[in-house]
Image (cartoon, rainbow, N blue to C red; front, top):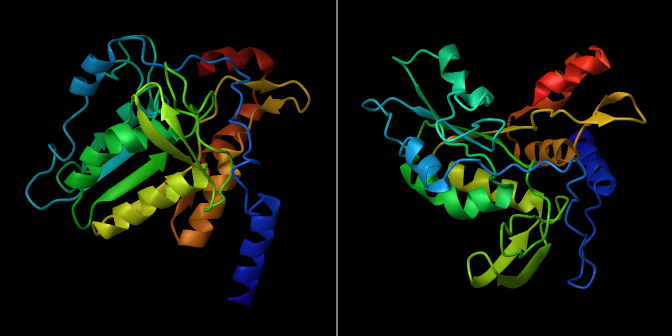
Amino acid sequence: MKKLLSTIALAGLTLGMSAQGFDNLPDPIEDVNKVVDNTPDSIAKALMSRPAPGSTRKGEQPVLFLVGNSTMRNGTLGNGNNGQWGWGYYFPKYFDAKKIAVENQALGGMSTRTFYTDLWPAIRQALKPGDWVIVSIGHNDNGEFFDQKRARAVIPGVDPDTCYVGFNQRTQKQDTVYSYGTYLRKYISEIRAKGANPILMSLTPRNAFDEKTGKIVRKPQTEWAAYIAAVEGVPFIDLNEISGRKLDSFSRCCYGYLQ
């Protein structure tokens, strides 16, 4: 136990867990890759194309819900008809449909924050004891806090005391923005409150090449998610590193196929 606490304390120092005042908030993460990650089709169509949360449940069997962005579900139908696939499309093939249903509830363009405010309530309501939820999100957590078009940025890091209150131009309402770690804690606690089981997964690598290291870019959300998983006692899958390590072994010319 002492060793675990020491490890967590060290991680906290590494990740900058010191309390932050309202006049000293970190800036939102800049979108250095300049990726436009809004679903190119009608958002209304995309919302209708996703299965109604819990609608695939058969009797008392559990459901595995996928929470994420375009790396999980790309395009309106998410079936590759726009030339791109999210991995969530293939995920059901690895499970016995007679024992568990897999619902890809992800949507391109969602951030950790906007998924929580816009899409998560319906999923939370559909959760039942014994269900599972994989949360792998964070690619779109950049930009401005309260801009008119997206308003999807979160505060970097895992500080539980960090929040920012302002007027959200997109929703035309007062809004509170929390840190990435706080949103993950919210997902976890609300999943557990329904008797379901949370799993955190780091981000899927993108077609982003680090000129200095010669490797695929690893985003900081991996460290933050790993920390939250350790503190909350949640299973953690480091997809970012597992996939990134494999992609690092490819030549530079192969990276164009990761879009």
